[in-house]
Length: 218
Image (cartoon, rainbow, N blue to C red):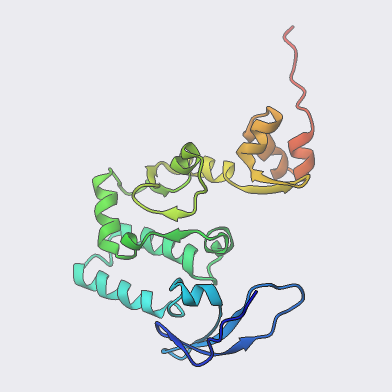
């Protein structure tokens, strides 16, 4: 792969300093960059040249603060919901980041402005106690659940959301990587049984491929 020379160039708030030496069989080029706020970061070449990464995250935080201040909604319950979604997708220090941003989950550009998310949620029946789900519509459409957007999100009860997240969990077993729900369909078993087994100490292979002995009717 031919390397672009990016040292000294500026991309958004990033200034590229130098190439980061590859480790082992690593194929992609990463660059040491410094943001205008002073924070350093390691950014892939493609993410710089395609405009995917334009700052350490401070740019988005500045836009968020301006949006919330402008509309006076920073204390609304939906604001906490929205901030939680952004944190899972963009804050690598968030405990859930590996399951969201680390897997490539993003927030659509429209929802980076809180007022747009707020309007959508209210227009679609959100009330305190309900949650935002991004998996149900994606699964029905047969596409990866990798974006929070008006087109791909639903408002659901906590029980429905918990069941959906459980069934959307990615598992790698016997050389296959699929969701729990897909493995359940493969072996003709209920996903609740597989999940119950894993919660009680079964290995993933045992939980998925051990036949379930059903009681015969007397």
